[in-house]
Picture 1 (cartoon, rainbow, N blue to C red):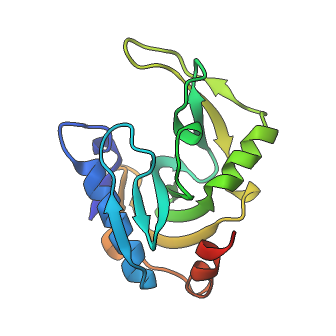
Picture 2: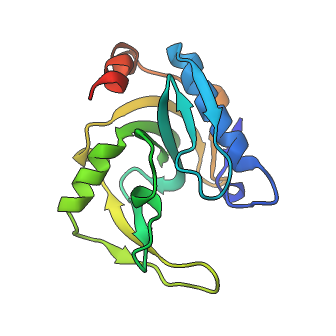
Picture 3: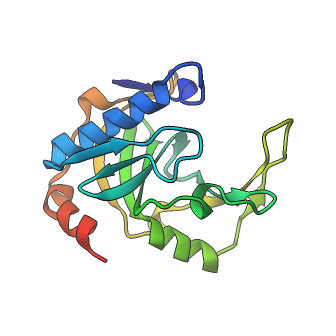
Length: 181
């Protein structure tokens, strides 16, 4: 599948849900895991479950060095990290011409952002869209597991999951990573 960044927020299509299904299926096929259900709706607590664990998927054309994490709405209302019930976050970002899918425990993200407030900023409320409280996301700060790589076309802003591949480190460690408390 070609995941088109521009189409993920087009709610007239279901590209976002199709992309979530595709990522879940791709991960499960690569690691022999049991796929669960996709949640739908604008305010779901997580995106899908695998092996009884819940996942929030974030797909961005931002690079792995300049990503951001939504902590809440600008007015303090729960959103992003403060609203999710997911056990894990998956981040698909570009690293040049490669897309990297990383897995991070939500509890680790929450713990980090309660202690580290450097660089947090607010986006403005525009019309009916309430602004957000965002923080820099530096993957080097977390114990993550890079589970898939795939081609990324920068000009088209597309990830190609059909050509994704895993790595031996992730193959050896994904079960331990998912089951560690």
